[in-house]
Length: 127
Image (cartoon, rainbow, N blue to C red):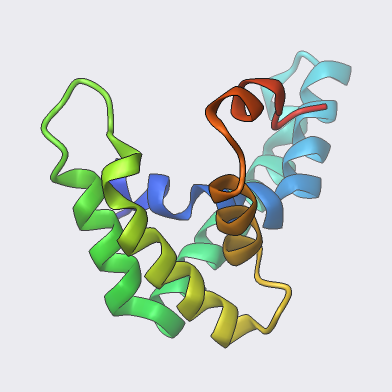
C-alpha cells in the first residue's frame, strides 16, 4: 500500500505519465453523473499510477524510498518539500538514467529548481 509520502514522492511522474488517462476519466465524469459509467476509466487511472510506483521501485528503489522517507520525516502540518531537494535530485537522476534523457522527474525537477518563487506562482499544472 502506498503511503502519502510515497505518493508525494512520485507525484510529478504520476502527473505527467498519467495525464491523458486522468483527463479521460475526468471527461467521463463530466459527461455522465452515473459513477458506474466511468469505473473502467477510474481503474485505468489507478493502474497507471500503480505502474509508475512499481517502475520507480524496480529501477530506483533506494533513492525513491529515501525521498519518500525524507518527505515523511518532516514534522509539520505541511510537508516541507524544500528540505528534501537532495533526495529528490538523487531520485530524479536515477530515473533519468533508467528511463533516458526524457525522464519526467528529471525534467520537472530541473524546471522547478530553475524557477524563482515568483515564477512558481505563475505556473499552473492545469492550463
